[in-house]
Image (cartoon, rainbow, N blue to C red; front, side, top):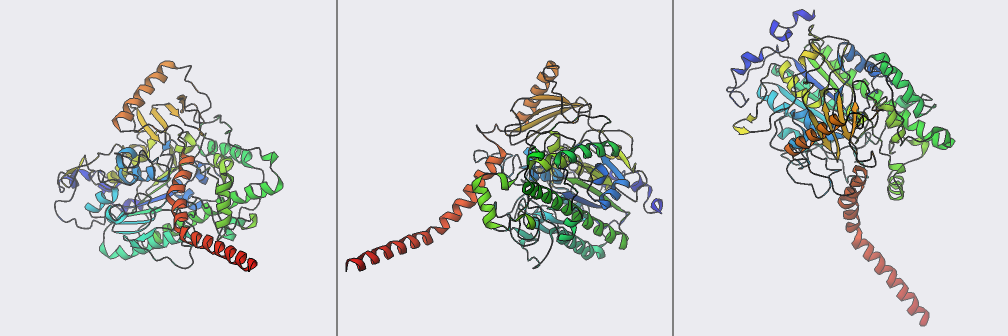
Amino acid sequence: MKTKLYGAGIILLGLTSLTLAGAQSSNGSPANPVEPDPSKPNIVILLADDWGFTDVGAFGGEMATPNLDALAANGVRFSNFHVAGSCSPTRAMLQTGVINHRAGLGNMPETIPPEHLGKPGYESHINDRVVTIAEQLGAAGYATYLSGKWHLGHTPETLPTARGYRRAFALSQSGADNFENKPNLLLYDEADWTEDGRRAVLPERFYSSTLIIDKMMGYIDEGRGSGRPFLASVNFIANHIPVQASDADVAAYDGRYDAGWDALRRSRREGAIRAGVMPEGMRFVRMDTTGDWARLTPEERAQRTGAMEVYGGMATAMDREVGRLVDHLKAIGEYERTIFVFLSDNGGEATDPMSAGGFTTFNTRMLYDQRVEQQGRRGSFTSIGAGWASSVSSPLRGYKFTASEGGLRVPLIIAWPGNPAFRTGSVAGGFAHVTDITPTLLSLAGVAPQQGEWRGRAVEPMIGRDLTPALTGQVEGVHPADAPFGYELSGNAVLFKGDWKLVKNLPPYGTGEWELYNIAQDPGEVTNLASAEPSIHAQMQADYNDWAKANGVLPMPEGYSAPKQIFDNALSNLLIPRLLALWPWVLALVAGIAGLVWWRRRRKRT
């Protein structure tokens, strides 16, 4: 029975932190070696990559995600939860509870302009001024494990095992192939997989989601004899580009998307309303970047529907691996004492290398098998593009990289099956943020969080808030309505304040002008109220300026855009070095041709 699993302190959600704090030094590290405490909960963080707001069935989507839906039924869904607009800034905040500009990820390596690289807050890797959740839980007696995408650094001092994880199988980059040990060849020369800080040896044949879960289950089983509770940070690369899945998983979606992206966007809106994560009658927009489905040729429709079928298959495959981990925890008797957190790092990915221009298209076709019937399979490079990205983030405006709700608002599920105090099956509608996750988990584990000092040195204090009152139904949200909350990435910026959202998107995602929305009444960001509410608009701009100055936000260079910077960085960091490495061969070829021409002319004269 659930109520027999824990003492009263655990059932009351970590109130034991008051007694634990007395056994720790002032900087949060243990004063004495910490003995294993089997009464403390395990923690499993399940981080999906580039999943839109309605990609989970429990949030209104049509894709088969029965295992995530089961966690939602046994936990709490957050319908107003926000992250960053791209990968590593979200991951930095998730790991530390500190805003990305203070954690070193003011921008990520792939999108940072050279003028910003290395400036304070723009190190493009997790810096030494923050403390991770693994470091804090490890100091409290937890075994700490990570598997999957890290994307917070690739040097010895920035890999997971240097930041609190005892065991770690980690990818330092934004993505990689799902079937083979090779990189996203448009961005990297090789896939940087490591295990415990050393180059990892991958199986000859694998699938990424399965491999990531295999590694995590191995770590958990390896540590069972210690008696320690564990932190398991599981970081999938599904559904990051390249979108890939098995033939069977793709076949399960055959014909599902033949009606096109507009039809999917409408159906997901209705599904989100039925699921209770969007208000009845909410309005939504059609993105300007969404093409006209009716004007596509039959061949283009086949390619586009096929890509979305692969996306669905990839999501279902990831969900199945989540279920395999859950089943394993049940089999070893750890399920009910485990807290599960599921979220995505940002909204759906609209980048489409196949439509990015001649150079990128040429390279994609040279490096991958891009036949329509092969997409999503081994050796292919598949992406869903802007039309479907808008649909998977439906009914919100925008997608990955934007500061619109479709880029920042993602599904969050928190479940603790063995804790009857959780308001299971409910929806929490108050504003929540990714920086809230670490403080919440520390609270539930009864671990006193760092307060700006760690092991005798000053560190960035966590800004997140404990979501426990929302999990137990005491309140709808934990952030004060009058407290401004800022965000910026790649020049796209936001200030949240109660029901209000001030937002600016640079081209190609917007005009660069500040817009104002009441996202409680208008989560689809349909009606810009900047002219109707000039005083609120002006005050929130002032609040944002104060926040940006306090957090060292740098202005973007003239003409900057994230997609263009990805291309420029890939060109300077990858293509040009590749060409320079080839110059001896080119020189030898030219010399050979010149010699042949000279020989033939001399022979002819003779």
